[in-house]
Image (spheres, rainbow, N blue to C red):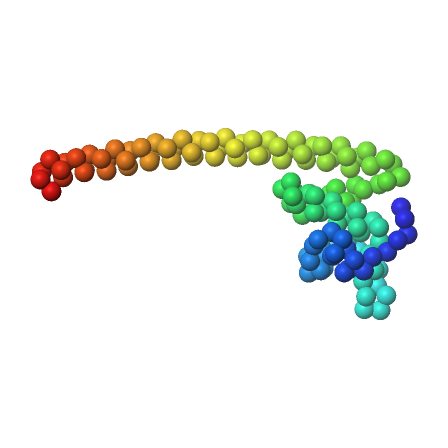
Length: 134
């Protein structure tokens, strides 16, 4: 792990995230920058953690799930536990998405049916009005 450090604005710029979001993750205990006076100094580990959080959020992980993954981060051990945990979470997330997709498809069918009934009722109403000379 390199001993390179980053300011909050360095991380904000490099990872395209607001400084407010970085401070929020710090408040949640997901990042632990050192302090030099009033300035926050982030380590390479903080940067890796932030990347994990952003990646986790993109694929729908909760902050608690991101925290678990960060706590398992262990580059000296090849990150085996972290990677296995990540694979399990990915499988779980994929199953949730597949269920959501089925739910959406079912809802689309129900919308199609409702739309068809409305159109038939409207056509019947118009037909009745036309036949009654309206």
